[in-house]
Length: 300
Length: 300
Image (cartoon, rainbow over the protein chains, first blue to last red):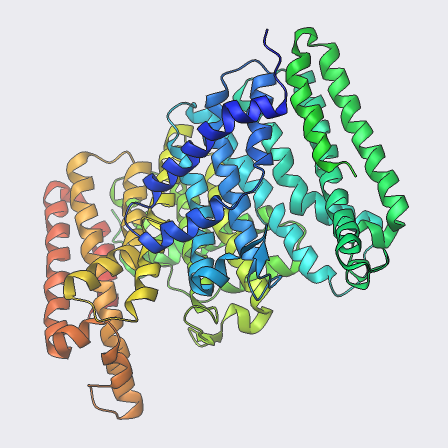
């Protein structure tokens, strides 16, 4: 058995996945050039593809055919990408830059950015519905779960709570709930979709879904902390930076040290899940390493 | 057999459909109160429900179970409603009123309007995926076709063309193409979905899809003409009203008389389709009357 760590997995699978993601765009947007351009700009915006990676690595860990996950992974990345475009709009977070590049509405104008987001959201379901490698029953389940995870009882509920939460101070429980919807739902979906496609067994599903819940939470704490720490490194401001601390964030509720402790605790719980998966899958250590190394992304 | 005309069909089926539409909203948005409110405001905005009506009346004409069309009709109305909310946004058409009521962003603010649109779009696919009365195979087809009709090679392509077309003068062919996507695609989908759910036979499908194409076109010419005629009645301005005539509209390309002639020709073609359907469905006259009377909506 070859040893397969995260960067090996990435270099083997992500170029193929990116090619699929892009060929789907050509298939879905054959004629509207500017719409295609705007959708491509954001899809190829240099994200780490964490969510698609989770789908594919879960399928791999469950010993199933990785390429069967491409449609679900692409649909998920389309949804994630649309949510960033709409989130950045002037009426929302009003961001000019994302990952060091101008945001969609700064490049293409606001109306095109709105439509590009709508188009990515709609095309996600088209990609899943038209996949030729998954059964109709599985596709229906994947579509229903994706709509739920990203819709008004999932990601969009989190975004609404976030918009409304700006006006008040949340408790730790409320903050966790917002993020559980806003970013957690899609991360959990990635793992659930992978399990579903691979026909994984119940104990595996339970443990991996638990893992995805911890990962989603760690991801958010890490994000909040990074804002504080990066600001410090870049601007020399104190850690109690107003902008970061007046918003509803983990550092504002738990302090920086408290947040780091919380983050480390959550990462440890995620590792425990992986250890339990390893126990009942003796020969899968190298595949589990992919997930262990994914956790490095969220360590401080 | 009871005589069944349009208003009878409406009073028998639309209250039940509206109840379904609304109960789906409760199911999809159980916890986010303001999101629910904004979605409900636009869903219950006093539209004529032409698209759901077409789905249900097509199923009825094909002698199948009308209530099996509720999920597809609701999904379609959700999509139509989201498109209106986003179309009205300041960055798009910047409309303060629709059907005599304030638009979503005027009532709830822009960020909520954007999210309510996204939520309706996403929930549409959830409703279809979770319907318990249609087979998985049919659901997948309905979802694929709905995404195609409303996505970047359908409605959204039309909206992009419309945004870009504002800057130049279109030919009649180009204008037809824009509207074929922008409003035609969802009207055609309504009839196609009805045929699919009812397992209609090929000749019926061909004729009814042809009908829907004419209806969609008539709908748009009528809309353009109404703007001119209404403006005249209300403001006393001449028929060559600048705002209407400098835009890409049928009256600006064909003149008012030419547009009326075009409209009448298209309606006649639509009626011919219905006559042919009637020929091979001898006992369906009353059900076909529902469609004939639908054409009254687009007569000048």
